[in-house]
Length: 130
Image (cartoon, rainbow, N blue to C red):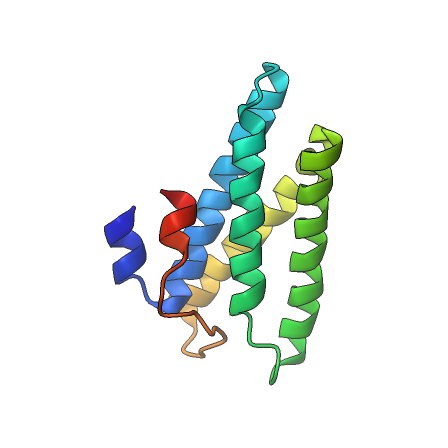
C-alpha cells in the first residue's frame, strides 16, 4: 500500500482512494451483518478518505467540480450518519454511487490529460489506508 500511494500520480491516487473506499464500505456492511463492532473502524477510514477527496478537489475552475464536491459531501454525511446512528442502509444507498464514481475516475485517469486535483504532498492517505 505504501509504495502504491507514494508512487501514484494525483490522478491515480484518486483511483486508489476509491478502491479503498469500496473495500471499507463493503467490509463495514459485512461487519454490520455479523454484529461486529469492526464496522466502526471501517467507517472511520471511509470518513477520512472522503475528507481527503473533498480537500483534493479543485473547484476554482470547472463547474462540474463544484457539483462533485456537493456529491462528496453527501457521501461523507451519509457515512457519518451510518457511523453515529448505526444505519447500514446508508452504506447500501451510497455504495453503488461510490462504485460509479470510481469507474468515472478510472476513465478520467485513462483518457484525459487535465489536472483537476490538488493533492497534498504529505500523502496523508498512508495513515488512513495502512
